Length: 267
Image: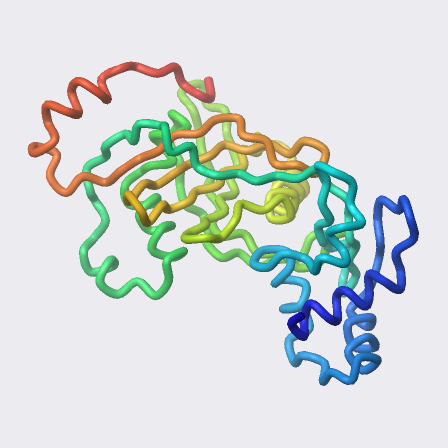
């Protein structure tokens, strides 16, 4: 087991009692249990929690305590405070049977040449090719990316990109976007944090949480409109897009396949 896994498993084993739905712990527990195990505490204690929120599976000793169809997630409950929370399992994967919608490539080549990460590259493609506008049927404006802030009752969070949107009758929307590439999973914790932030900071705007995933196998940009259902991720709508280098080359395909007028998602 990894160093992080040993620390988090030790905390859970000490605090968990049968049939508990929530198991609270603090950042100080990370330090004390590292010493208890003879492990030098990580310099970045927050990375221990972050890794099990977004990158790694929880140790088997923790996972097996959840009933069938459920899992444990780690949520922030304040500054340096966390909880293991029992949640229904969510495994959001792109539907490979969906036909991708072709979009003319508008990403500046210089950005593609010098992009520093898959996530940043994906966010740039969504932004420059107006894919969010196409998906939601509204006009959107990127307000800030990699927004780091604090939310009362949760602690520090980071939103990959935040958009403002307006539809044809003037309704306004706040749109948090989480970007995933490769094997990264769409996470219920990030969705919960994004929604809570938007409802707290922008109570008068309609919150429309979005996840976008880049499929390297066939260069699809997979976009999901999400909802939170009892700490489980639910898909409201899913569409796939593929950037075309030359619209003229795909002209016949585009006319025949993309001509169908779908109803507006937000009206």
